[in-house]
Length: 401
Image 1: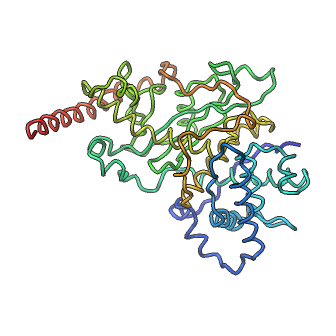
Image 2: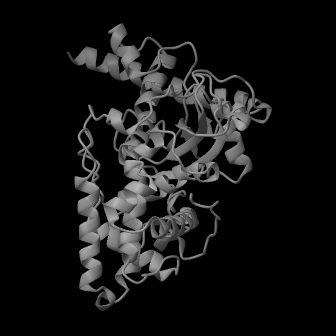
Image 3: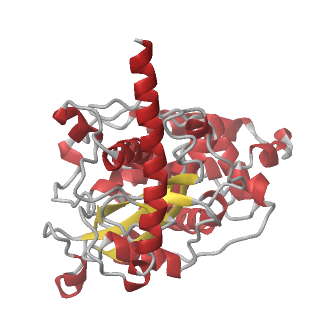
């Protein structure tokens, strides 16, 4: 029996308190309510998450304090409760285990020594609880001040001071009946959902748009997100890649110009004009979303495989993973241990061809096309000033030497 379709609900609380994750909010809850048994559960669950991931996995790096804090939080909102013999910590731990191991109910039942019926009931409850707090944890930060990574670096500060993050799309494999498969077949021929992710420069996700057919373009997913309420604060913008239109809110690199940093390195030369310089620095900042997505997939390899769950649940798994990622990030969970040569064990996945994102914008969203002229003028203004400063500094250094 598979999890039922999830329902979304949100409860309004003080925005700042919820955004920084209720470390302060939770600290107000009396510690005497935390029993020795619950504390032991958190430690045991974290040991399971760390030690039972198989060869090839990095450490999950979630600590008992993070699990305890989030458990207190969902208790305080009456989303989950202790049951006879099963604490909230263990319920959430089972859910995280499912996402980090792509574990079916049989494996969950064996690993946590619970009946399949018990596993199903609590996984369903965790889905409902975690999806319902998405609005609390996946949103714009309350402050839109220039991030220190930009303001402290002269390569970016004067030019990208109003940039608040980066956006990219990824494809997540799905399992679906042949009768319904056609819209989900992507350009590589595999079945996926196309999802859009936006992150800030602390690698927290501030928006997730999921459930879109694999055949849909990245730009169309972005437009759908806008139509569904995704807003860019006034005067601010995100960086996007070539698969998106260039607008004043979504700043893309120049087309037909070397872009990725490896392209510049292969040419073994300095930027030749304002477009090349802009693309090089744009690429460095855009790498934040690529890095955030890599960490997300490392933590939750279920995003790399087609799962056994009912289709409605498959479409919501990415949102649950993003919520948990942000909780771990904001509570100080370390991701520095994830190595560059990390791989998913072949035995745990079904290998499929996945698109890495659209390479070019197909001019398929009329409402965004109309914004491109303003976006091009905005980009030129940034790039030309950047180039003028670059040339002036280069000549100054040359004169000094």
